[in-house]
Structures are given as structure tokens and as C-alpha cells.
Image 1 (cartoon, rainbow, N blue to C red):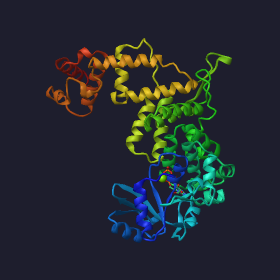
Image 2 (image 1 turned 90 degrees about the horizontal axis):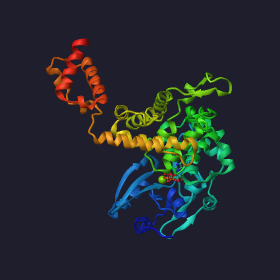
Image 3 (image 1 turned 90 degrees about the vertical axis):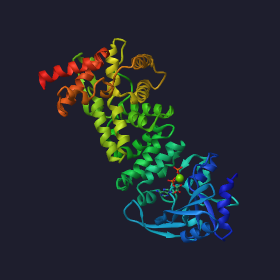
Image 4 (image 1 turned 45 degrees about the vertical axis):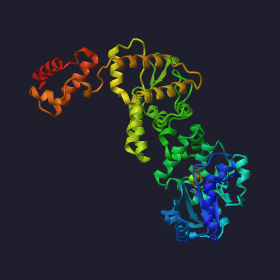
Length: 457
Ligand code: ATP
Ligand code: MG
């Protein structure tokens, strides 16, 4: 097995001091799958203080990044890695973290506290001997996720592990072994105690995998979806006959897979997953067509979807900027372009969406359209809209108050006070200019503003 020379050098700092050092965790798993390794996690029998001394003596640096758990970051020449002293964990009472973390003498003890067999393999450095007490290599070969030891016990110790199983399944395209899968249901009462941030990290990794629907379907099957994202699980069975063949959940998953397959940003993937999440709550039957013609309607679902999306994302403690961007995309995802749209309608569309969001709203729309059928969608009308939008932008039209030929200061010179009325007038000027860009001159706008103020000020 080819080991990076920098890693060999770091390992020799330990071995020349009589200490053991192993590559562990995801790096070994990736290596056995012949994948590129992104970061190095090392395990050693040296205590953190000893690690600090020997690394410094060799000319490296040590940062106590996770010293509570026995982890330090080692910087040596241009390389960096995390080094953790062998640990055992015991007495889990809250389902979130062990009550006691103790240092262990042997690598096998350290491996036995790890979650899945594929993550409990160590590669001894520098000779690359594999230490694999739980058959992890065989499981990797068979693309199987299996708990180390008794699945129910492992999940009861740390309620995040079920989410990790599902996330790895989605990321790696592995299946979860039956006992491990069956044990998830019985651990849901433990999983709900886990912090939302930890759950979100796993959720994000599902969303970033090549086919997120795999992870979300497993969440649904195991009860994790109902636990963490009940709003999404309510979309199951909400049929949309008359529009397209999938229920709201399958449609959303297809849209999300499309966003992932096309490498769209995290916000677009989130918006693809949540864009229709308000449909179950706004659904109404329209029987005006009579009998078999009755269809479900989902009026203004985009607004309710944006509200629910915000609630979910707040719960998951996403940063506000991510929440705002995602919710804006969800709110604006419904537009039905036809060639009957006037230029003013196109300008209004740009003003509503915002120029900075246009590319993402097109991406979301493509994902949405893909989700109608899951195959060869027709993007013709979207393409026409993009052309129209580009033309209008090239013409240099105004789309925000900032683009107006007057400022608030100008309005003050004709006696309009700053405050609510000023805001209202600027908004009306904006409307005027969206309707007719020719009006966007200083003199003309001052004249209109003066008139409005006189009538209503
Ligand atoms: P990734 O490629 O996502 O980083 P990883 O396997 O390295 O995958 P990490 O979350 O970085 O995952 O964890 C590193 C290792 O620590 C895991 O491989 C596993 O051995 C162990 N581990 C992490 N979280 C847990 C947990 N909740 N319970 C038990 N072992 C865990
Ligand atoms: Mg890792």
C-alpha cells in the first residue's frame, strides 16, 4: 500500500520514540476502497503530553484541538494530522456522550469503541500492517455497514450512530446489514436527545452525497425522517395527479437528486428538498370540474413552504445567511413563464427574485421540472425566459431602488421627509420604472414623487 511520504515521516517521530502509531477511521476505509484520502486521523499509545513533547522535539507544532478527548493536531513540515491517544469509553447514560473517557493501552481496545466495522480498522505505521479485529475489510468489500458488536447497544450508547449509518450508506452507496438496520427503530428515543447540530452535520453529508434520496429513503424506512423531519414525512402519499405522477415526497427527492447530480450548491439542494414542503398543509380539493374531474389544488404553497423551511432550518441551527438564501429560493420557485409575459412582467420577475439569485432560481426550476417525470424534461420555456431576462438586463433596466435615478436625499430636497412615507414613495417609483424604464430620469421621478406626496403625504 502506498503511504504518503509526509505521513511516514510523522509516524517515524512516534516509532523512534518507542510509541505505536496507526492510521484509523475514514482514511483506512477510503484506502481499502482505493479512494483518495482527505484527512489523516492517527491513534497512538502515547499520552497527549508525550505527543506534545516528542513532536516539539522533532521540530513540529502541537495544537490541543480536542484535548478533552485526548486529541491534538500535529503540524509537521507542511503536513497536518489529528492524533488521538487510544481510548475506551464507558457508562453511557445520556445517549449523547460517554460518562467516562479513559486512555487505553492497546489499539484493539480503541477500535472496539468505534461505530461500524468499516470504521474500526487500523493501519500500523510505518509497516502498513492491517489490524482488523471485527472483519471491517470484508464488510467494505461487500459494501456493508455493520455495527461493531451489538447494534442495539451501540445505538443506545450514542443516538447519533443511526444517522451516521444512514449517512454512510448514502455517501458510500453501501447497504446497512439487517441487524444494524433493524436496531435503529428501537433507538429513536435515544436519537432524539442528540444535539441538532450533530444531526445536521450528518443530514448535510446526505445532502452532499451523489444520490441524497438513498439516505432520505433510509431515514424514512427507519423512522429517522419522521423523528427529525416530520414535515417531509407528511409529504408521503400527497398525490398530485393532474399535475404529475409522483407524490410530493418522491417528487422532492427526485428534484434533490437532480440538484446533487448537477453539483448545485448546498442551498439549491436544500431548496429542492423543501420547495413543496408546504403542500400537505395547503391542499384543497377542487371539485368544480365535477365527479372524476376533481383535482387537488395547492394555492400559495410556495409561501407556506418557505415558512416551514425556515422553521426546519432554525431547528437545525443553520447559519442565518444559509436560511435566508434557501427560503428565498423556495418562496420564488413558482413561476409559470409563457411567451405572453410582457417585458414589464420579466422586469418584475427579476426585481422579485433579485439578480444575484437568478442562476440559482433557474437551477431550482430545472430540478423541479426534472422531478415531474424523472426523465428527459423539457426546459424550453425556461430557456426562453432566460433569454428574455438576459435581454432586459442588457438593456440596463432598473431592478432595485438603488438603480433609480433619484435617491432618498433627492426626495428630501423637494420636502419629502425620511421615514415611512419616503419608503412608500420609493417603492411606487420602482413600480413605475419596472412598468416603463423610460421614466427613470431624475426630473421625471421627482415630478412623480412630488405628485404622490401632494396627494397622500
Ligand atoms: P468522514 O470521511 O466523513 O470524515 P470518518 O469515518 O472519518 O468519515 P469521522 O466522523 O471523521 O468519520 O470519525 C472518525 C472515526 O471516529 C470514525 O471512522 C469512527 O471510527 C469514529 N467515530 C466517529 N464518530 C463516532 C461515533 N459517534 N461513535 C463511534 N465511533 C465514532
Ligand atoms: Mg474523518
